[in-house]
Amino acid sequence: MPTIDPTFKLTWRGNENDMSFIADLMSDALNPPAQAVSLRKAIKDGEPHPTEWLAEAYFPDPPDMLSIKNLFSHVMEKQEPWHEPFFEELQNDDWVKFALGSLGPITAGRFYLHGAHDRETIPLDDKIIPIEIEANQAFGTGHHPTTAGCLMLLDRFAGWAPQNVLDLGCGSAVLAIAATKMWARPITASDIDAKSVEIAEENVHLNGVADKVDIFESEGFDNPALAQKAPFDFVFANILAGPLTQLAPDMAKYIGKNGRVMLAGLMADQETKIVDAYTQNGFRQINRLDHATWPVLLFVKE
Image (cartoon, rainbow, N blue to C red; front, side, top):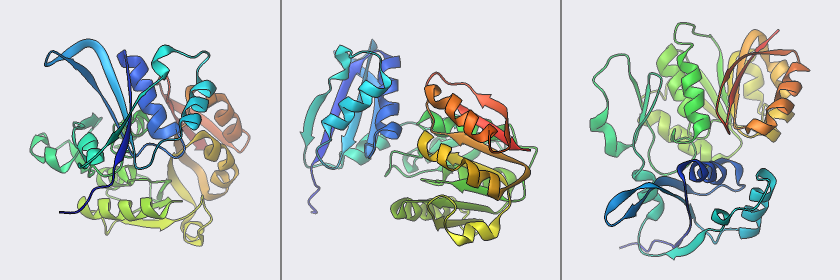
């Protein structure tokens, strides 16, 4: 039997809003992010607690507590008691797979995201688009509000199919898979991380769209293959605020007139900076999916 390396776990306990916020931070704002994040109700006397929730973050190595503390200091006005997590070292089980496997399906508009263990739950509805994402990576399963928000906004474009689409910073390729299934169009996808590209390729095969999605490793638009495919009519960029800001000039260069760009991964207090950067580069904001922490923005190239 193979030996499974220990997993390190941090657990926070509090109300649903606070724990959801921590789960967001651990999966998207922390660098490097947690390998898996779970948000669930606490258990008391064998029953779900009515008000208490747990945010659990799993790491392959001991987490950098100073980085986590600095992250809280950056986004919170004051230190709260629930900021201090309980630390555990777990042995002899695939806890990351367990944490992600326990996540239920997600419905976002017409899209139904599920793991292999939930295939039998796919609704019998021709309007539903199922997407299977294996429980092996935290980012891109649909449980994070940036991914779910992008899918909700994408759902509104069902009747308008752009010809040339790019999923920039694709992660699990969930947005590329959703777009090609809804629009029946070939999609280009890219990610800066080689491991993410490998996972994305596995997922497009799993979802039967490998012949419709071309995936490249690229830092922004640096891969010449992306420049050759430009200009794009529609670009997804679900990454982080810093790279989104830096990419604004290249977005203007590689997106055609009247092309759209959907931006996510920014926090609400970073929105003004993002809007300014894209406005200065010839874009106009035309839509916004509201979220207290993680809004999704849509711009058109003028």
